Structure formats: structure tokens, C-alpha cells
Image 1 (tube, rainbow, N blue to C red):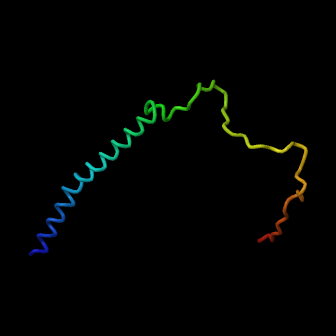
Image 2: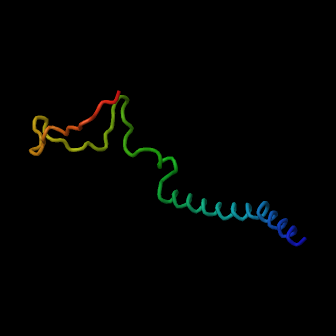
Length: 90
């Protein structure tokens, strides 16, 4: 009988009290994070908007271009690639 009562109390705790406590704790955490984000940015919309003037239609903005070697020169240690032997399976 006491097992059934303790099981019922545990169910009531998990079903009705625990969600209220978790919602209050997580709600406070989320509010705190939103406040921090608002202090570090001018507005929430600025977080997603890129800085600078908007590009004109048809233009592409490139942030990084890797350095390239001159077009006609190959590295001194270049041996012409690597040959991989394979066997054709029919």
C-alpha cells in the first residue's frame, strides 16, 4: 500500500510540479541570455544583418581568396602526379 502511495506521489511530482520548476528556471536563464545579447548588439536584427553597405545586384562579395602560385610555374618537387594501380573487375 505504501508503495502505491509513493508511486502516486512521485507521478504527481513529475507530472505537475517538475514542469513548473523547470519552466521557471529555464525561463530565467533564457531571459538572462537575451539581455546579454541585447547589450552586446544594437538590436537583434543587426545580429543577422551583414555590416557595410548592401551589395549591388549582380555583385559577389568574396571574403577570402587563397594565395596562388604564378600560372606558368610548377613547384620544383612536382613529379607529375601519383599513379594508382588498379585492377578492373568484370
